[in-house]
Amino acid sequence: MTENNNLITIYQNIVTYLEQFITGQKPAIRKILAAFISGGHVLLEDLPGTGKTTLAKALAQILEMDFQRIQFTPDLLPSDILGVSIYEQQKFHFHKGAIFTEILLADEINRASPRTQSALLEAMGEQQVSIEGKTYKLNDLFFVIATQNPIEFHGTYPLPEAQMDRFAICLSLGYVSAEEEVAILSNQASKTITNPIAKQDVYILKQAAQKIRVSDELKRYIVDIVRATRTANGVQMGASPRASIMLMKTAQALALFDGMEFVLPDHIQEMVIPVIAHRLKIDSQAHFSGIDSENILKDILKTIDLPI
Image (tube, rainbow, N blue to C red; front, side, top):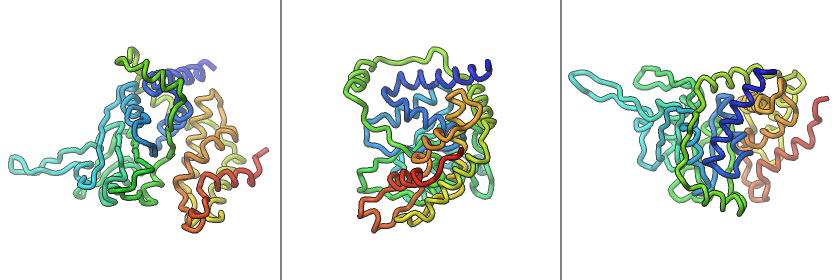
């Protein structure tokens, strides 16, 4: 019981610190931390000025982790992300790119060409990069937070399905209430982290999340939800097995945050839309009829019986 309390305290301390920087976003913070602890990556689709960049920088500051930001532009090259070999002193020396960090902010990722976007595929999927015939391992805590503006399409390239599938969750921070926006104005003084969270505590949370029990019935429930997306009306391409894995892992993280030793159906349902919605490709006819992936998932949840 004491160990459980310690784990909850670590999580609550991270949330408390983040809320100093990001006001009124506790539900989103909970989901983002679930993705982080489960080893996934996050795509934030939102309007400018809603705190996406601040959140990424604050998380790195709170955990004292290495942080790099890449501003994605149409002329960005894969070598700008991965690194490049430069001929110096009669031999080639490899200069590592920004991807060799712990927390990477890929800002406005959809402004870069598909060729440049694909430079992240191996890194996000396997925590390694292959450059000039050599494989380089990335940090164990490597975590990508990517952002894109869902409204502005001029000069952007849509993320391919393979790239979307690499993100554990996709969500929007959205605008906060008027009272919370007033609080943001009042909290513009410089913020300092007096007692940052030790990296070792992050490893402890990751290991503990993996030990959270998931019953066979709940595993079947997860699989039934994901498989239902592949035959749902209006869906051209459903979710992959990677979605099943990330749905289970993020649910385990939520159970850990709640002080539970096992996953509940509520934890799975809480993560269904953030984990699966962005992975679905809706056919054009359904799209023009006003059908979207969130509504499809809500219908699926209504039709699949909860495990007893």
